[in-house]
Image (cartoon, rainbow, N blue to C red; front, side, top):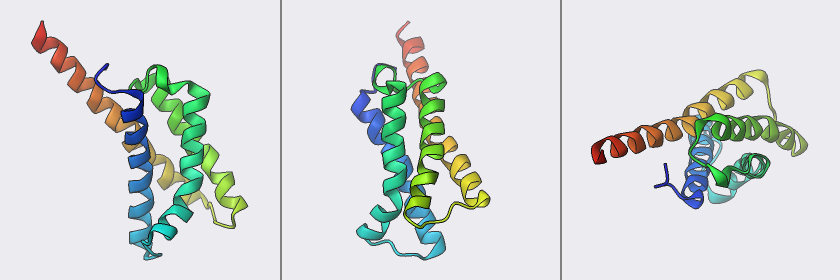
Amino acid sequence: MRSYTPIAALVADLVCVLVFVVVGKADHATGLTPAAVAGTAWPFVVALVLGWLATLAWRSPVRIWPTGVFVWAVTVVGAMPLRLLTGEGAPLSFVLVTALFLAATLLGWRAVALLVSRKRRQSRA
């Protein structure tokens, strides 16, 4: 798992959030301009960074447990109040879709990285 630097892991997490936002905006036809994407993404980006800080994720950024799970949870739970403060909604269906999509991506890339790392170690042995 050493092949992923903390910066690469943070970028991977940010890409997951941005893909979530772009897919949602495209699906709902609410505009894909940089300003529109940024306006929707910022609560998730702020919550993601808070998740990284709260978990000290840079110490073991690729670990699924506890790093990935807590980064995911803080991202989902932290973004919702920020959305509400800016006048955006957070109905239960949105929260559930957000949680599922971000779990699949934030934990998914870590699972792939773990498998690749194990395969590399096995092939070297």
